Length: 472
Picture 1 (cartoon, one colour):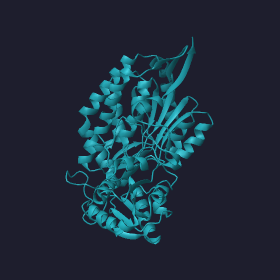
Picture 2 (cartoon, one colour):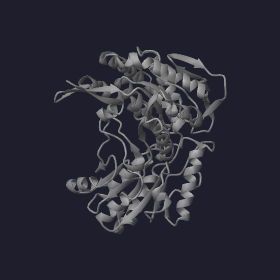
Picture 3 (tube, rainbow, N blue to C red):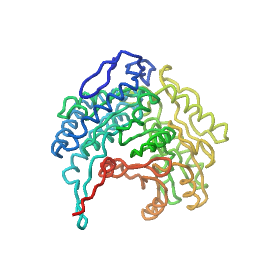
Picture 4 (cartoon, rainbow, N blue to C red):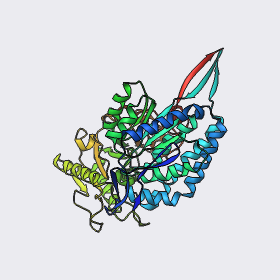
């Protein structure tokens, strides 16, 4: 078991002797690590360190920042196998996928910023004015457990590149990759205090971070409920906020689409990371006359996704990240049955052949789902797909836009122009058109209750910059 009873503050590992938080292995339920249940004092120390380091780091050269990110990129590549196994055990993503995504994406994202930074216009000319982009200040980063290192990298890399200093509160459910990151950064040329890590619970260290007067920006990824609380707290001090929150994304299959390809693509997306993905396509919208066929195709697709040990190279569907999340998803499956939806595949029973101590859920498909039902409106965050029928294109668009969320979506059509036209009517931050590939330099973020601000690429960097103009 890993004893991680320490925080990283002002370039030093600071021992913690107070209460700790158990970290569980998702596939077995066993305790595999312990991290600090830090208090407000530790977070205040971290913010003070970041504030003290800000002036000098904000005036550092672009070459200095790039060098640090190059060192970080090298460390992420070197420790990729360790990162993959760590996240696999904590979150439950199968090791093959964890290697490509949980370990691969942080290095990929860091590389995209290394390519972009030399040409980014930190100063521009506008008429008789010189427009300058200045770092916002001390940034508080609060990150989730589903893609624990990836979500951290999406914040700290552009923040550091912008000249900001950072205090990170990682999720206590999956914190170990953040400790690996801190260890990598400790071996770079990053000055003391620029990056700080404090582990603990949201109502103590998270609350202190959000409300601290020296924190000028809060970047958060997580639930809409928590984002709502952060937005209110940040408003008291007019802090800048970037919020990437929940989703209930619709996959719209138009009548002329290849139904088999659309259903397969939607199911694969929905079940990625056992549905623990904010952009998961959890609503499949199909023409009414193709509803039953879509249900058959979806049932056949999930039948190939048998839950199993995430450390096995052949496993395609792992457990959920915690017992609490497993129970929440099972309650939603029971709710879907109570609401009258047709159980096409799966169900609330524990899957056969899995470790009984693990947090496993059967991949579940519901048909005849009403658009206003709770399983069609609320984010479940598990391997649950709702199939909804529509009568015409206008109704499909209304249903797709008929939730408070707007993070992602998909459109499938045999006519590429029609697919783009319908995609342009979805009130969502990104739309996958006919299975288009994910792009790590395109803006990512949501409409409505899914968020404020954007990540990835130049848009992600701009979130951490203030704009100042010199009238010459």
